[in-house]
Amino acid sequence: MSDLITADVVAEVHGRLACITLNRPKALNALSLTMIRTLTQALQQWQADPEILAVVVRGQGKEGPFGSFCAGGDIRFFHQAAWAGDAALGEFFTEEYALNHLIHTYSKPYIAFMDGIVMGGGMGISQGASLRVVTERTKMAMPETHIGLFPDVGGGYFLSRCPGAIGEYLGLTGHMMGAAQALATHLADGFIESGRLANIWQKLISTPFETGQAVEHWVSSQFGRLEVPVFPARSQLDAVFSKSSVTEMIQILEGASDTWSQDTAKTLRQRSPLMLHVVLKQIRIARQMSLADDLRMERDMVHHCFHLRETSASETVEGIRALAVDKDHQPRWQPARIEDVDLAEVDAFFVSPWTAADHPLAALN
Image (spheres, rainbow, N blue to C red):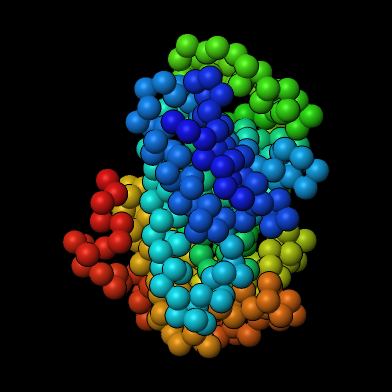
C-alpha cells in the first residue's frame, strides 16, 4: 500500500514493517478525529496486506522522534464541540473506541513505544498492543476525573484487571506512574532506556525479518532490567480502594493521620465528586465484561457526560473549562462534595440511550 502521511500522522512501510509516528508534538500528540481516522485506515489496510508482518508506533517529541507518546484526546475540541452541538463530538468517541478495539484484537504484532506522556487516549492506542514498551521518561496516567470525565478508551477493561484495588486507585485519583509502576500494574511489558530507542527503530526498519513473531521477539530481547517497586502503602491502598463506596473511602482516608492517606484524600477532594462515584461503578462492572461490552458501556457513559445535563451543568465541560480553556484550575463541581452525590444520577450513566441494534458500536465483538 502507499504511505499515509498527513499533517499529524506519518504512517509508512519500510520493507515488511509498518511504522506509525504521531506527529503533533506541540499538542503532545493529542488525538484529533482526523488522526483517529488516519490510524484506523492505515491499520485496516495493513491488517489485510499479507506482506506486512508487524506494526510499530511512536510519538514525535518537540526535540525529535520519541520523547512524547500521546497526551490523550483533544479536550479543547470536546469543549468547543459540546457548546456548538457539533455531531463530530459523538463521531470522535465512536471512532476512537472502535480504533481501540481494532488495536486490542489486531491480528499482527502491534508494538507501542510508550516514551514520555501516555495518558487517556494515549493509553487507548497502546494498552491493546502485543508489546508495550516503557522508558525512564514514561509518565502514564488515566487522569480523567480531574476534568469531570472517566477513564474511557477501554479504561474500565484494563484498569479493572490490574492487581488488587490498584485499578480503582488509578481511575479515581489519576495517579501518574513511571516505568516501574507501569510494569508492576501489568500496564507495560518491558523497559528500554530512551537513549536506545532511535537505534532500535532504525534496526527494526532495516532488518529483513521473516515473521511478525520475529519482530516481537527481537524487541523483547532489547528489554533491560528494572527494579519493580510495590506501590507505597500498597496494603492500605488495597484496603481503602476495595471499599464499596467513594464516601466510605474518603472517610477512612480523612480519618487517618499518615501522609499517604492525607495526600490521597486531598487528591480525591479535588476531583469531580459525581464522576468519582461513576468511575468506581464503571471499574467494578467492567471487571466482569468483555472488551467490546466495556467499550459499548463507555460509549453510553461518554454520551451522558455531555447530554445527561445541560451543557452549562456538564461536569466534563466545566472540568475542561477550568483546566484548559480559562485555566483558572477552579472547577465548580455540582455537587461540590463526594457525600452529596445523588446515586440515582450515577446510575443514569449506565442506561444506554440506544437499543442494542442501534448502538454506535454494535458491530464490535
